[in-house]
Image (tube, rainbow over all chains, first blue to last red; front, side):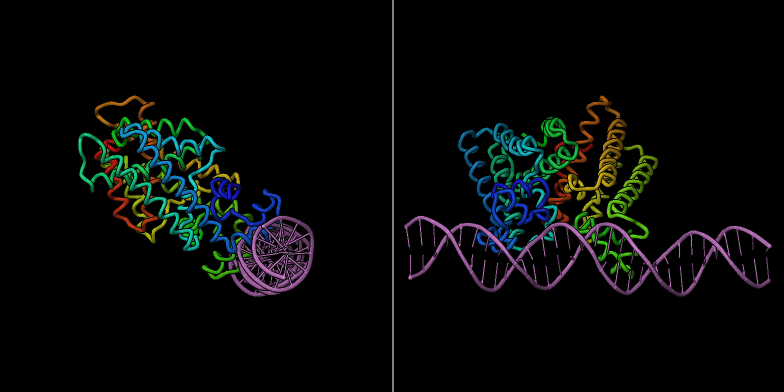
Length: 178
Length: 178
DNA sequence: GGTTATTTACCTACCGATAGATAGGTAGGG
DNA sequence: CCCTACCTATCTATCGGTAGGTAAATAACC
């Protein structure tokens, strides 16, 4: 699954191949089918684990610090880390570009990732001492999620992490990020 | 080329198929190869025309109005229009997700699209009466380009144009957009 | 103007590679 | 004894791309 995840993060769901995964881990492609009968099963398992891991990490951030500014900083660092790690994308970010071609079981997991991200961001924004209406917080959360995803995509295209850093910093000074 | 462009906007470069294009226009795939010997030739031609059209339209916007706020509004409307039109993506936006797998001749065109967008946005931001340093303007332009692309991707995933509208509006009230 | 040569834009019929998926067999540990 | 986790072998579908042929339009020449 680690190999498959890396493949998708680098080249998208479509480029995920049973034969390539099998070759990388030293077995035959039929053996992968034994654990994941269809490609949709494999893709859904990847996205599910990815989202679950994210939820756990994000919750641990909130438990460690109630400061929105710090939380958001750690949040953007997660997306930054994907770029640092072999110029990869967020698994569900790159999959969402192929959304219409994904098997249904994969699509629901990709959608869930976006949902939990927005939900968590909404919660963090609501912690601000200044106070913010729930509906506004949710819109702002969606805007942040979209902006970070876009920044990751653009920075990866440029192969330049500083482009990501400067873009996120621009979001901050502009007032989009707390 | 219109058919091919629509296919890429909907499903990405990888899903672009000579046979599918040929079927849609009522010829055989070999006839497409006559005009575009390789898939890279076709993809590069699509991206080149797309970028050239964008440059022409953006320049006409600047000629029609020197007001940054109005220009940016028209700019975001271009990306909005793609969503309205069959829930499509920006051609080069979706291609940039597959950047590492693109033939070189396609990749340079995709990169050029991002470049001309950032350049144009930089020029528009520089028109602001408040005055802005060139380097800051360019960073801000990149941030805007990334944010709009991200908003388009997220809104398409939700199949909800109002998500795009609200996100752009949030960018505006936050101060990212003039 | 009429004839010939060339080019354009398509066609049929393939090729090799690769994809996901399946059937059926086998070694080994509990 | 049987189940887990692999294997070999193969299927069908689709991919980009090529070879070679053809009808019609166009250009060149006498």
